[in-house]
Picture (cartoon, rainbow, N blue to C red):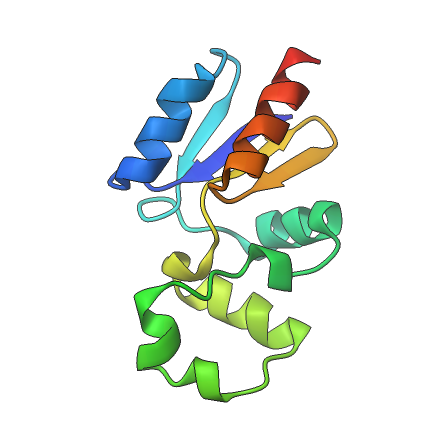
Length: 117
């Protein structure tokens, strides 16, 4: 499977998609208009090894909801990502059996490597 979970309104996601020049067989899912299903999130967590690595602590609601003051567990990360799309660290790319999470330079280089096969 080749899929990217992104926000179409996010300039960083747009830049990364353009930079990677993703092939036409990629499935694009705008997580704002097409919510992440529990099954999709579980698949991402299985590839990533946990839910925490998929969770964005830079989301505005992280502090607004006081989550920065709580000790979150794996089931908490899952719950919050499913409730609020902004908690998913973006973009998330699934390339075969590999997952790339976020927009760091390292993540983008990793995606380029996986895309080359």
